[in-house]
Image (cartoon, rainbow, N blue to C red; front, side):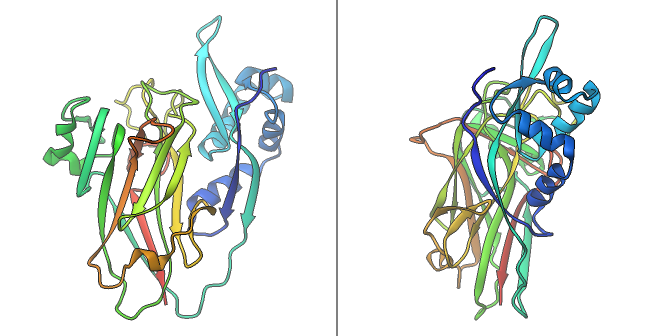
Length: 313
């Protein structure tokens, strides 16, 4: 038995418009998958060991593990074995808190804007770095200049070891409206050579120049193809990320419902601004400088770009 890596708590807002919550809840709605999570509570096991322990066909165990991994409840890593390689599985979450939906205020409105990952307005990329479209590599590997090629607007994956990408969303909140919440969601993971888990990276988000906080990505996920990842992209490379939701309310800033900081909507000073600036990056002085991969709607596991939602009355 091997000691499992440090796990984390997860707080989910159960909401029909929250794809991460829906995926986690679907993953948990299965007795075999709950038994897998129980089995991995204090040990690391490969797929064959899990299948044998639970009396499941290997193909069935593999399917369940894939669903749990896609939901961010499991971490996996391929390691050499006597014959080929084996997938080692670890539980990623120890405690799950679910917040049930609340009725929305009468007259509440929502603005939703989807931004392609290649439509950044400012960028700094330290190698290893690069961009890829649905059809192929854009520019050259490890060449920061490639991030300014015209083809960057077609990017479906971008990565760098350290730096940031900033996006400007049009501010469509009507004059005189009262802001209720603002959230930005995107699929992201660390950036390691090829792929590697664990490979922690401190990923920070800023809104209108104010730092909301930092979330530590547990790894650079590969070894299993992303649901949307194009066929030409090699198996050994990064395949998918986790869908993260950073939000700000009048009470503070959160990631997946977990408090990040005391920054509130008032601190963002959105009224009167023509745009809302969203910056995603890895600081030069971060504790874990492990890079990031940012996925578009045709790469990874989630068919979405960077999505901004603003609720107001």
